Image (cartoon, rainbow over the protein chains, first blue to last red):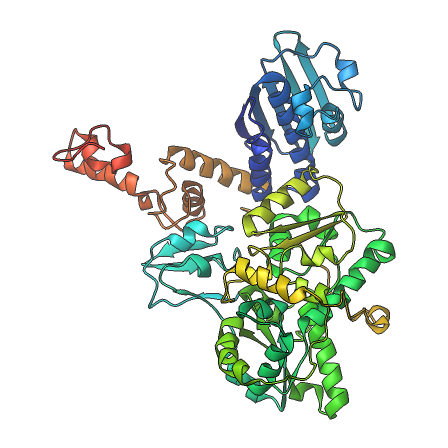
Length: 139
Length: 441
């Protein structure tokens, strides 16, 4: 089976459009007949990842590979990178600005949720270079 | 899927207005007229509202069908009360319903108060194993949207039947008791504000057998009531519900009946799609109850009503003044014998699935993407599909061809004409030059 590739540009600093990639991807997965539970998990992972890229990195790109046995989402940005990945993975830890928190984001649940809802997650990051988060959900 | 929206072919100009507005992309224009794709239509009534030629209609029952029964009962939706100017007393409307030919009335607002009481019980004790928030089952458009597009949210929908159905069950029982007639001799007629409730009356979303014998459009009844109401003098006390029941006709009415503030009331089809997306992604704040109304301002905004929804809402609010909060509680019998509960579960209907076979679906999707990316992306609708994406899908599924795109056709014409100047063959938005003998904007 040919894997299917989806690509989304995530605009930085635009909270209004954050979540669009998640919503678009959800539509595609629905059309492909994936189990509703799988779709929901993918959507949450993508949504959290998108929000992270908007808050911390002025946006980035999201690439999704749909394979026979898994769905792999790769979110890459050229943002500030994560200084302490272990800390960032703790629930409730956030470096989001006051402005962002005012909007109801920055609760420190993004990365923990992404880990919880995916089967495998890797974070590739370098300070001042950028971050790539790869999440795999088995089908 | 069954639906009650239909087309008057003689009026349809094939103008694509309905197609562009349909929230589920259920309309295509072919051979000069709009066609509804049955499986995608959820009866929201948007096309009826926007059609400039009044070609879209709801299939309701004619008023005279009440004569097919020995005894007829009107079930007025509370939104009916918001249709009349200067109305201070609901009893006038109810008496006029009797005067135009019904033998009896049973207010849907009365059953709505029972449903509200039951919902409070559900939240408090009965439904502790259900996921939160509970989603109201009252708006059939919202429920059908959930079953086709938000399968993960199906378990959130309360398993209580719609107020109109509970009203029909009670009405029939009461009339049997009062008259001794056989149940099938009694005709129960809903006075409906929307086509979706016509459909759910015929093909219940929750009950195995329909309990409503017919649905008459509110517009139809309105004209008759306008004549009958001025003749009503000193009507007897017929109204039997409080402000909670009447309030169900407007957005927020159902949730305010829960007597707490942990709820959200969302109205308008686009808004409910957005809120369901957010709920599915886990992005809603913690609430206990989600009320959904596909029509703006709630049922008073139904496309079979007469009055502007905002005006109707203010009239309903006026009527609610000085009314007791609620006059009805759920009948213990309805709980014990489960009359008020759904007989069948809601099921996911995967109408958006491209193919049952995953790899075939992926192949189709890849092709759709490829075609869509080669399209101009204007979503102009000239091809008879609501967007380039929808056309691409129709092409892959075999219902359309690439040359249905007017841009593609012009490209081919240019090629056939051997012209070097591509501009001449492009529609104005895509030309590089202003064009011969044209003023520049």
